[in-house]
Image (cartoon, rainbow, N blue to C red; front, side, top):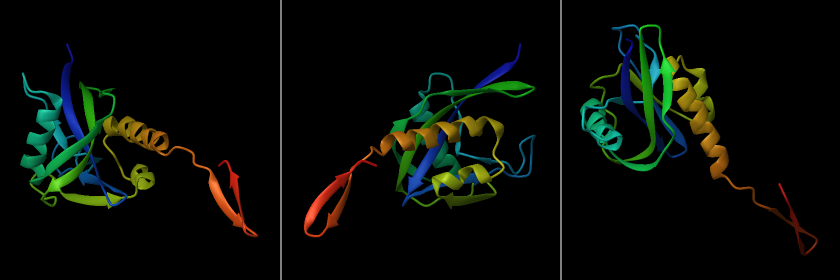
Length: 152
């Protein structure tokens, strides 16, 4: 039977950018980029796990803005389901307790990093959710003293 892990991850937003964290040099996913988070303990809710892991890994307190749908992924030797949460920092600055590096990127640039495979569908879902957050608004043009509206 394949081991199946349940893991939270934080998509931390700040000033139009998103935090990505690079794993250290050990293990099968050495130096891959990921959203910070960790394994859910028995009896622990995903959101409680997220808060615990972010404090342990990065000394951060966050406000959860919204969850995204869980994202299952199968690696050759195990399976994982990621529980992503879009967050903002309420207390602290990222500390590298469990990661090699962090970077803040505009959302559209997230795919350029060498991500852990399980995080790739989370990135796609996050970017899609951003498209849904920006409702189409009419463009208001001032021309010769009158207001024209065009649908974008």
